Image (tube, rainbow, N blue to C red; front, top):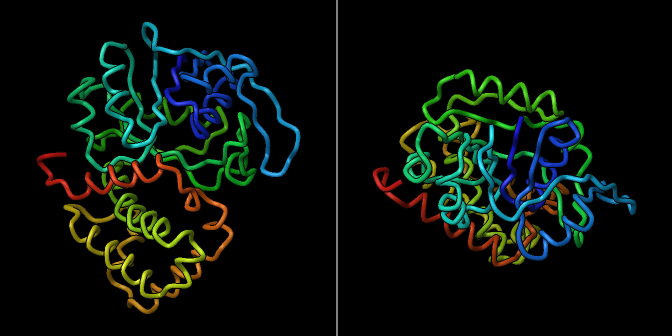
Length: 290
């Protein structure tokens, strides 16, 4: 497979390195200092607490070139518009592996509706200089499958091929027939959570403020109630039906857990805030505007 990975952050770099090691013709698109570092050292990977990093010599490019069998996009929500413009004239199916609550129509309107696939990355890590530090449990054992789907929910030959290709490269991927609803459900939960954590100064500080947790839960319920389809996965429906007191207790326990403390929830960068703001705008937009 000839593959372009658009976005050289944690998820894009991990994905490009794994696909390169699986024997695919991969190019990783990067710019600025990240491009310079990748050209000098390749993708450098290390487990969370391992001082040694290994080098994966993934070819890097600054601009898309020609056509590809697949273009995978790993960027933040507020960066998608610029990506769409740069891919409008580049051939190849485009799999958007990112936060997105505006529906596939807004993507297809720029690059062609027939090219769009939706998904979400489930493995991650942190940037330590130019080294990607990943959690072995996420990257190697892959407990949570990467959902991938067609915008209209069909199980097409290209979707079957993609899932199988990802699996043979070591990724736990699955076809998700309701990918658009999956992404909107995720945003309905993530936006109040991320914004509340940012306002409190971290997940533990938020957990210590029951009133703030109740306010966060209220916004989650409002977002889920505004959806035109049932939440995906269905377990998120519990946020609307279970007693508030029980849910607040569960959320506070989660916010104090290592999973929350060591996750991207603690990040306070302007890019994180900008992504949450854009997702919030998408959730508020009427269906016809998405």
